[in-house]
Picture 1 (cartoon, one colour):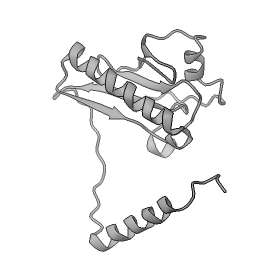
Picture 2 (cartoon, rainbow, N blue to C red; picture 1 turned 60 degrees about the vertical axis):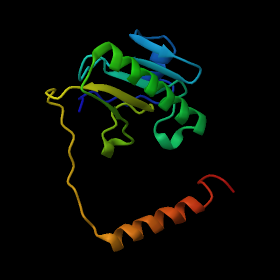
Picture 3 (cartoon, one colour; picture 1 turned 180 degrees about the vertical axis):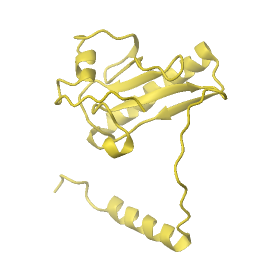
Picture 4 (spheres, helix red, strand yellow; picture 1 turned 90 degrees about the vertical axis):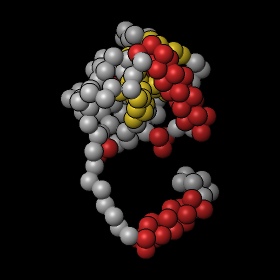
Length: 153
C-alpha cells in the first residue's frame, strides 16, 4: 500500500484540487460526474484512478448516479488499458476507511493492469464460518436492506 495519506478537509483534499485544475494531473477521461487520471504511484504501467468530481469520502457518501458513473468510467478505462497495455488481467480496487486501506479520503477506484509476474499480492485470511453462520449473516443484511436508509424518515 502507498505511504501517502491525505488528511485534508473536504474541498481541500488533493483530489478536489486535482478536479478543480489547481494541481497538475495526467488526465485520461472526464465526464460530468467523474475524472480518470494516472496514479502518481503506478503499480503497473496504465494504473488509473477514477474519482468522483464531487467530494465524497466513501462509497456510502455517493449518490446512486455517482456510483454508476464511476463504474461506467472504470469499465471504459479498463477496456482502454486492455488495448493499450495488453495485460494478463485487470484489477479494480476500491477502499473505504483507514481499516480498509483508504489513504485519500475522496472516493476513487483503482484500475490496475495486471501481469502474471508483477509481484503485486492481495491476500486475506480465509474463514469458513459454516452454513449456519452464513445464514445468520445473510439474515442480518436482509434486515438492514429492508430498513429505511439512514438519514431518512
